[in-house]
Image (cartoon, rainbow, N blue to C red):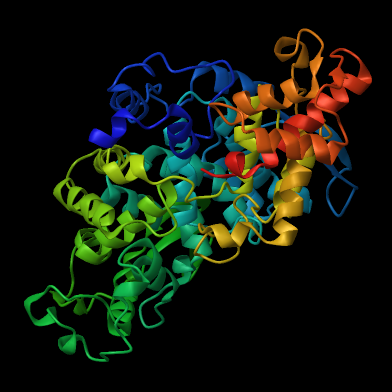
Length: 531
């Protein structure tokens, strides 16, 4: 707890939020225990009973529109309109016709749920008062990644996955979270478990459950052992890790976990076409199994085999290490200290039966001395860059198709990463030459309102003429926090060919253009790009 007394608010908001908001200091920021008090509020968000957001976010969601345009086709008329975000609150059965393509619709309609969810993600990142929840929602979307850009059925299921799975469980209990993911329409489609049958078990979901969602790659011991009984600890039901035999047996445990997608049941019988999760007893492999050194008796009750696998994965010490390493990597550093990971893993295990298990662990990480001590060990990904610039510059950001396209081009295509691992969470993935050019394009485009996402209110920040150096210093104070760095100011002025004492006239085209460009340059400085 000692380190929390000196950690600057700008550092906290850079890691546990999408940046500080312009002219919105935390009411407790002058108190020694301000971080603990802020965490108490952020980890217990005051959400309505139906999961709706705070009023400002609801207002932006209600006002947002995205363009949809396509020519007439086989069975549909041409469309060219600005349409509200109508998919976000829909149940899966209302969206599933897009997955089944019944009736046939144009491709942009089938991708519409992904675009709307991406737009809502931007709105919440910029405007939500529950910033830590949004950071963790982003984390869990990557941990439990599905590719909605590559599969229309995943796109159709994405609003429900975001709303009822990721957001509902982001601060909760991991075991409950695992089952919500396993039974979600999005994951059932993405990792092919809906097609898994006795005698032909599909291994995709079971493998990612062990390798990514749970125990992690470091616990994969198949290179050392190829029989379950040889794995250290397996004979007493506590193996150090898992091997391919565990994956095969777990895949059998999840046979029959499927979706109502119209599949045939034999004869004239078919499943309904709703997209909802269902369990088909006749498709389940009912015989005995062995997973992680534990014997499963044959002919268990419906879904018991799969649920027991989820229990074993959630409770395994390797899962605690894997998840806590990932959380520490997201919130602290690419290579988090072993002691911090161990601290978090102990808390994870001790609170595994608590409904707020994840929130408790995040609180422990944020209040640790390592969190306060380590600085400049992360870099913002494009979503964070956009949201933090909008928050710091005071842009009342409105998502548009053009901005979403720029984010796609930046390498962070929201809900469109093809591999199950999700977007990279290490600095080197986001600092190549091409990536840096895209960062500059994003920042300058936002500053100049190229995509009609909202203009900076320059009059409120620069009410009177001022020298160029003073403008650069003022932007540093707003975007970086703390005292301006003379070297940053000098580099910006040199790059723009401006003398330090050159007067900028707010309210004129030339003056406003320069003030916007200075803001973008300040945001390109390392100090702003680091978390």
